[in-house]
Image 1 (cartoon, rainbow, N blue to C red):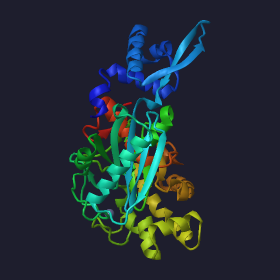
Image 2: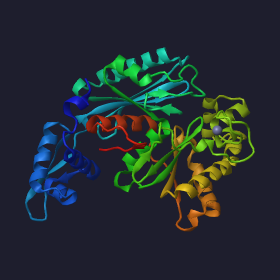
Image 3: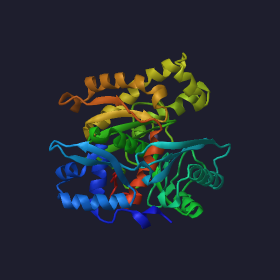
Length: 389
Ligand SMILES: [Zn+2]
């Protein structure tokens, strides 16, 4: 029994008011009326509905300019929960998040074999474990969002022809998990989920357009255009790892010289004859020659970023991903330099490269997508995905 069938928003203004409260943190009814163009009486009615649904609660009384005191409102973090999963090559991470997008409990599982049947069974067990050990009631559980490396086909809820997931090609993982758990499940590319988490965290400071560069074993990306994630027709937009950056080795995609084949953790690990996990440890500790080799390859990343920036002219470029805090901060400065030197549109208005702010962004973003779709029944249409809440 999915939450959406019971208590999702019943009319669009509930969403408008809920979103405004979330963006503001705390707000009175009168301030809501001033910032939403809805009448005070309409606001009062909608707030009453949202309080009944336990999505909004009182935050006490505040002084107003009139001298009277008014009730301040805030989102009830316990109003709804979801689990976000990040599927990786050697296991997965599961994050139970509340209605504010805060992680309540996280479980990381390494798996010796990543066969679909076994993996989905373990994921289902972990989701049940997260929900029961935190005493989340069935009525307050929205469902599960899965962030996965691409390519995916979100129409059928499957990973399609994944180079590093043998046996997973077109396995209907979304449907299988829904059958196992009896709740809603959605699928999104890992880089896209990370970008959604970033938009959510930046709140009213979120840029209206951005390129998110997602560093994991490979290199992914996400495009935000006009405050919405551009997911692409099947959910794979923003594959910056497959921009050709020079004469390089053949890529898994079949082309020659893709960024990912020339410069990525996967490529570097193969070259250095270590595992990706070992390489991350070496890079985190800035061990030579591993670190020098990594940082010397940044101009290749810059070449791809400059190309995408010239095509899209986003407001900002964010660098993040699974290893955001380990290895990404040193990429910011050389990328800014490259854009200044080579970016055509950069000359018109500087485009700033920044470090993404959210740790474990992909699993949190996947959970947020599930919360949003449970409340609004909107997952994504015509290639555009937004957090409607
Ligand atoms: Zn490629």
